[in-house]
Image 1 (spheres, rainbow, N blue to C red):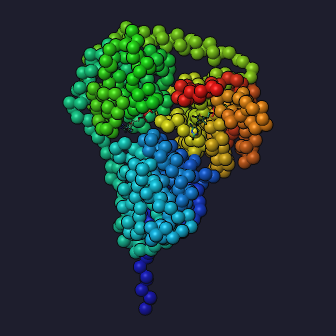
Image 2 (cartoon, rainbow, N blue to C red):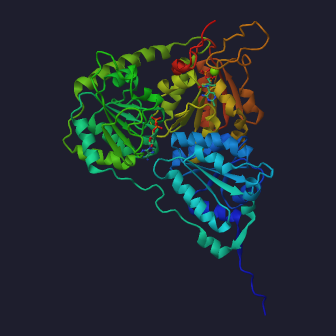
Image 3 (cartoon, rainbow, N blue to C red):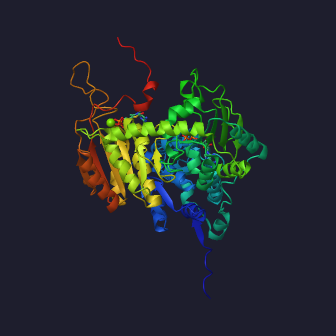
Length: 573
Ligand SMILES: Cc1ncc(Cn2c(C)c(CCOP(=O)(O)OP(=O)(O)O)sc2=O)c(N)n1
Ligand SMILES: Nc1ncnc2c1ncn2[C@@H]1O[C@H](COP(=O)(O)OP(=O)(O)O)[C@@H](O)[C@H]1O
Ligand SMILES: [Mg+2]
């Protein structure tokens, strides 16, 4: 008689993988090591896409960018303690940006950590992660893996999206349990990011404000881009006729050359608007906290007390900086659709004296910009190099732009127009350097589209080693390093005349292109717009990993770019 089959078993490794797959998550960004190396191998063997990085911060940034682009939490796996800590910056940055990601780190067993007995890479990771993310969980038993993964997914994407930490002690992976019971323990999360319908009275209050506005303005934030409510947002703008201002990662929700775009008249509209509608945008430092000179305080054109409408899924965002006269709480798709419906079919467009004044200002500023862009100085400056990229993105609006630096960031934001939603990934709310290659890898992996990373040479330095990652997966990423020999510019000198370089400059004429060549990618040193254009066009067409070292006039930059005013005044002795 045949020996009875032992019941099939499963283990922690497979339960984690099966739980992710059950929730349509097919990609993991990671850096191997104890205790997750075998987990990554098994994940790949089980058909997961496993993208392995050279530093955990960039794996985490990739997970965050994937979350922003897909509305599914990006997944980052790290080893314990130092690997976990390297991932924390990305987890905290994702939470600040409201990007959904889950940082999963292996950890030491509780009994050793709680007695501080000095385990390999011992750290109380859960306690350390908690203040830096939206939610944090630990799983000790294999039968709880399904709940742990489900809770992490729901926490990451529901309400205001953000970063979640999931702590998996090493021994959990090898725990086994009955396969059928294991399958039963897994949870497919139903409706992880439920619609949050706004109250009708809140909608009406907002519409009434808009109806009586003489100088209305709509500000679209990265929350509006993340919401993927593109048609509703276009309808709101075009039916209302109200000028709009896209924040940097909301560019492309409507094409930047749209007739109602007020980007080129930003200072005028912020100072003079009488009713401002924030859609997925916070009145934080990026909008001067909604007060002061930027908003017309004290100017003769100030329209008296400005009224604010705030469309946001977070009920506590209102009044954070200034009083909000009409908070509309809910998901942006539901809120904007309700507002457009309440506006009704006979909505009177925004007053023409307001829209034409903005159009005049926009045309004047755009003419000035065109004049600057037409110049062809030698060596190149930010404008002449960015004009090449501007033209490339116009020809390839499906390309994704990643952008970081100071001057390289500020000039690119206004010079490189975007034409489609969620095509620009940048330093976000914190203004953090180092997001470049992680975001570029995620954009290429998640969308398959060509990626153009516009990098200050300092900014590039934070993640440059990931050029090897880009080559290893043969990703369609073209990195353009704006090489001005330093942070902000390349001309600072050591005041003592000593041999040490000044703190803000780099090796002169650094050959960044050789870094990409070192890993089999294509490297080009471009000293003219024509050379830059040829290399960029070729890179976007071929999809070959490329680094273009664009030589920029080292005197052309200003300290801290647009935010130089944030520097404390160093008293000159
Ligand atoms: C993690 C981190 N470190 C340091 C900074 C400070 N910082 C740094 C170091 C910048 C680099 C500017 O130099 P760059 O070469 O990237 O750009 P430009 O020379 O074109 O201005 S911009 C900026 O705010 C930061 N924002 N984030
Ligand atoms: N799906 C969504 N529905 C509504 N609000 C959202 C959604 N996703 C994010 N948000 C909100 O969008 C806002 C994003 O603001 P912020 O990051 O300051 O944008 P920006 O920097 O572009 O101005 C946050 O307050 C967040 O709560
Ligand atoms: Mg620089």
